[in-house]
Image (cartoon, rainbow, N blue to C red; front, side):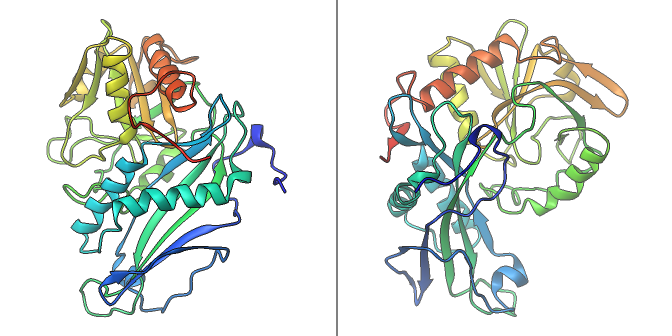
Length: 340
């Protein structure tokens, strides 16, 4: 029976679905894993995830294509990124082939919750892993819980494609994704206070600068930056400490191979931001959200694309990538994985 959901007005929040995938690591090995209906997890008060925050997560989406298939976008890259993160955190990586298969299983089991094509909503997929046994000394856990749940969601940023206003943060980014080369969403808690402050001041997001010199653009608390020059070159910041966004990598490929744009991944100075024609935030949840204004401690930087709509290059990038994802444009080999 189809759930009674107003797909067109769906927010970005949690709606329980019928099934989730669960696998546990004990005595040096992962069990076979299974789909379960119970949405609760029972843990010791001394579980490692509570004491030392040994956890990591990923995020990806499933959706209907134009021809009626349910698909996922590049889940193999989420699998490899989560495996790298787990290894850095002294957690046993969940096998990448099993990760992709588990995603397929849980999406297929919850196909009634996949929003209809053209609704603007998607099925968000959240894989995560936690240290689950009791640990009081500072050391890795011995047992781990891997789970994937799904939930239908609407747009991540309210207002859709309307450009937003952001601020240059007064806070150092404090490595919201971890430290150095930790490569997934490890600890967004670091960025919660700055984003609450930004919202209270009327801004949609923070622009974080490098903590050493505070002269180079890094990322926001939950998305990567892309910029477009006045001559149509796509520029994205390069730094070893920002999240290696799958969406950003895909946009760079689309820009070069589908749209014929020049692409540069390099250090981006805050001082050159006023010279760009367009700016956007990109990630799994938002795809691309355009930025129309950046406020740097009272100095206002308006992007020539304006405050009312996406700039022309950002619009082409968005339309092409979502066209690939939704089956309107032929994808590169392996990008779109059919589930049902």
